Each structure stands twice: as C-alpha cells, then as structure tokens.
Length: 443
Image 1: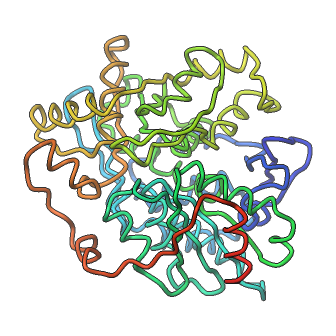
Image 2: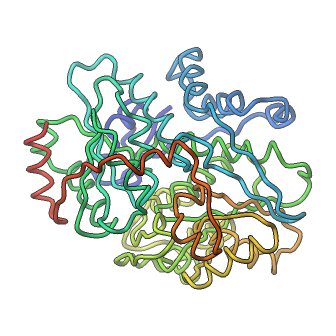
C-alpha cells in the first residue's frame, strides 16, 4: 500500500509513515494511491461473514500485504469487538447504530483500530510517540479510551471550552495516566489549527515524535469504511438503490463511505447532512468552497467551518487537488455521488420529536439531522432505501434530548459512572505559541 499527499501526488509514502506521521509536511492529507475493488465472491458470501470477518477482508483489500495476515487479523478482531446493528424505522428508512462501543460513539471504530495499528508500527521505536487530537465532541473520548495505557504512546486532546456536552467532556478529562486534556478558549477550528500548526513546526518535530488521531489520520478512515459493508450485509432487500445519510462535521465518515464505494460496495448515493455549518452543501450547490468560522449548534460534533477531509473528497474525483480553485468537472463528478442538506437547531428538535412520535425511537441531534436529509432526498428519489448513520447514543446529549422530548433518557453504566469523576484539564487561550510551550515543557 502506497499513499500520496492531497497536495502532491508525485511523492509516495508507506502506510507506516502515513500512520505515524499523521500529516504530510506539505499540509495535505494522506490518501491511498490505488483502491482495488473487492471481488464479486466477497459480496456473494457477505451474509455468511461476521462483522470482524468482513472487516478483516476489507482491511486486507485496502492495506494489502504491508502487515502479515495473522497480525492484521489480530488488530481487526481486537478493535472490532462490538456490533453495528441496522434498525428499520419503516420500509424505506433504517438506522445504522454506531454507538455500541466503549464510549457510545462511532469514533470508537477508528480510535480502537488506530491505537492497535499505531502500537504495531511503533513497537520498534525507542522514543515515545505523542498523539495530538482536536475534538468537537466524540473524538476525544474515543481516542482517550482507545489509547489508554498504550505503551510508548501519550495523547494530548484539545477541545473547545463550553462546546462539548458535560459527559463528553468527562470522557476525555478523567482518565489521566497517558491521556492529557487541554480546554481551549475558542472553537473546534481553533483547536484543529493549533494541532496542524504543531505538525508543521520544525522545532517541535525535532524534539517530539508527533502524530494525529483526528480523521486527518488515514488510520481513522480505514476502519470507518468497515461498517458501510456491515450495513449492506444486514439489508433484507438489496435490489433497491442504497443511500447513506451521513451527519457530517469534519467529513471523515463520508470520506470513508466514498472509500467503501471505490472498494465495490454498491452504494447509489451519499447524503452530506449538516447543521448551520453548511460549507460542503453550499459547495455542492455552487461549486465554490468558502470555509468560514464555525458556529455553535446542538449537534456540536458537526460544528466545523473548514472540514479537513473535504480535500480528500476532492482527491477522489480529480488527479490533483488545487485548494484555491476546484475544476468544474470535479464539482460535477462529485455531485453525481453526493447531495448536501443543512438544517437549523429548531428543525432538528422537531425531527427528534417526529422520530419519537412516529417510530418510538430516540435519536440524538446528529442522527436527527441525518433523518431530515434522508427524508428530503427521498421526496425526489422515492425508490431509494436509506440508511441513517446514528453516530452517538442519545444519552451523550442528554440535556438536549430530554428537554426536547420531555422524557428521561437512560444513561448506560459505562458513561454514567464518569459523572462523579473529577475533571482534569489545562485551560489555554487559542494561541499556538502557548500550545507549543506546553508541549516542549511536558515532553
């Protein structure tokens, strides 16, 4: 497996380099040079495969022979040890529940796989690896859980003050040991910019081995493609056009879906469902990409104003990414596969109520945005079978869900027990020089 930077297709990197480095020196993003579709026989027998078994086959197709099969199988089976059930709402719409992992969010898939892959590649290194991650919600908790007490690896998580839910904050600030949290006085985009600046700072990189656990790291995207195949496996009727509606923030989940399609998964269309941070839907409508400062919403994990993975998405539709201008042919090609919709907080709350009243199903705000987008798409494409990615358990947004539905939401024990634990975080202004000093002093 070879990878290139979205800013330079000429220079190739190994998977180990891409995973441990996280970000190329040119500030692009790593993406596989080639993606070979899975054989027809895989899809013919997919219903006989367990989730870990099909995930292993998909991982082999992406990674190739870089890792011996028995080692790769051990990594996959250890990481993918919980379910991703498809729950039908009606004959046209179903929910892919991605919150059955240890931190009740879809980020568990990527974080657990990444931690094991990084540990595999890092075992021969004498110097510790420091993982930097910016989070707008669930990434931090999943990374903290996935990397907790991993030998030779330390983690620093940056999150925007007041913009993650209380239980999300507890998930990333209560573990300690090799996990450190920084509460930034700013937005998720500020946190992400600080992390990116750290990777590009030569002084830091001479002293500290840095890598990333955000979806900017290719090791996050690989396992996120697994559950698209698992959803397809569970469909009873595979004859109708299949559409995935994806609540989108940094667009790692949608990019993973595009990888799954390149691997041969018979997906007819993808829906980019967003809140007020509608940068990509606006691009799909106009052909112009205009990132801007993010705004806070009740679906906070999607509060991203300049989604990093947009350039990976572009790279799948063009030979070379040019950040300043997108060729019209690229825009037209992308629109064939992706539609974009955006919704307000008020509309999202109404959707949460509608889903409960109509289907007796409690959905978190992010999934509700996905529901709205799917229903709008199906007014034009009524023959499509739609699957909504429910990315987090509703208890992670308990205040919003309970106030919207006027019900009591049960909190799973593994999350409830965090409420009483003391928060440990370093407060910091959104200034890179402060972050750089912190890292140099700590490591």
